[in-house]
Amino acid sequence: MRNILLCVLLAALIWTAGSSNAEASGLCCQLSSGVQESLAGVAAPGNDEVSLQFNYSFTKMDRYKEGGVARSLAEAKTYTKLDGAAYTSVPISMDMMKYTLTAGYGFNSRFKAFVSLPFVRNTMDMTSSQGAMLGWMDMTMEPTSGAGDATVMGLYRLYRNRDIRPTDAVTLGFGLKAPTGSSTERSSSGSLIHAHMQPGTGSWDPLLTIMYTKVVDQFLLQADATYQYTTRNREGYEFGDSTAVGFSGKYAVMKEFGINAGLTFLQVGRASDKDGKYYNPATNNSLMDDPANTGGNSLWFSPGVQVFPKKNLALDAKVQLPVWERVNGIQLVSSYRVLAGISYNF
Ligand SMILES: [Cu+2]
Image (cartoon, rainbow, N blue to C red; front, side, top):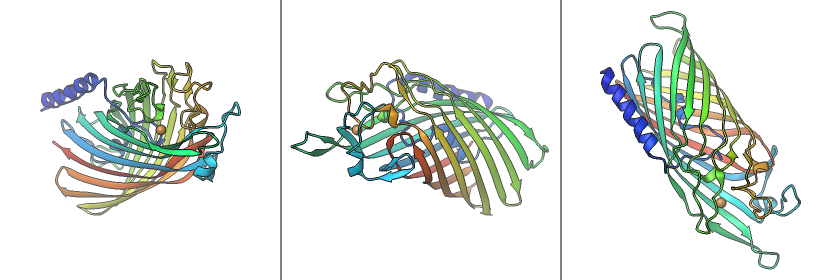
């Protein structure tokens, strides 16, 4: 059994490595990589078990925030760059869809490894100024879609209070997000599209995560923190580092059905475009492209349900709602995210 599982993991890795033209999701939504979504979701594989998960997420971005204050699209159109020039290209809305396949394997009772590969599709409506006489014209961008950035992650259980039915456990995770998704998609005019709409980031990013879980009767409580250290991609662009801290609780209503809720605090650093390939301030007046308008802090509330229709099979669905945010500059921010997943342990 172990060999089969290793083969599955290897195959996933090879597939991942081969899909160098793939696309990954940008960080617009300010929520981090697919593997966190998967891990936050459903059952981890047991000893010598393989788990397969399929997750879907949809993010709607259609509001503006300047710092912590809500702004209208009309207000966004009046903003200027740091050099005083007006933004002449402003996003109206962005939809991000992500389908993530995650394979996991439990090597022993302490160590589990996961590989996840997302497939993403991003769409955007924008408006651009045609000059003082002609006003603003709305347009829909060519959607971007394809494989995204794959993540490999190992989870190591540092501590549990007892061997049989432990109620307290601490787990440490190390991961690496690989640049399997394209970060160099271009528009028909030949220029690189927004860095945050590219399928991938183009960078190798280490991840570190630690989680504490506690079982009290029918409740499962979890506290976790994840840090993603971003690096610069070949085009000279570097997304901001991110830190996510979460608290969540699951309540088993009955054997086949559970409800859960969580709070996540997310901190994302400002991006930097060293060589000006995505944003050349001399020629680019796009609000979306200006790194001054990237990064910020946000707090999310996530209610959800889990269904276990039969042994080894789990379904889950949740909504993530921003309850507070404070962004750098002025940014298009999310109204909601919807996530759904199915997992099976072999
Ligand atoms: Cu756009």
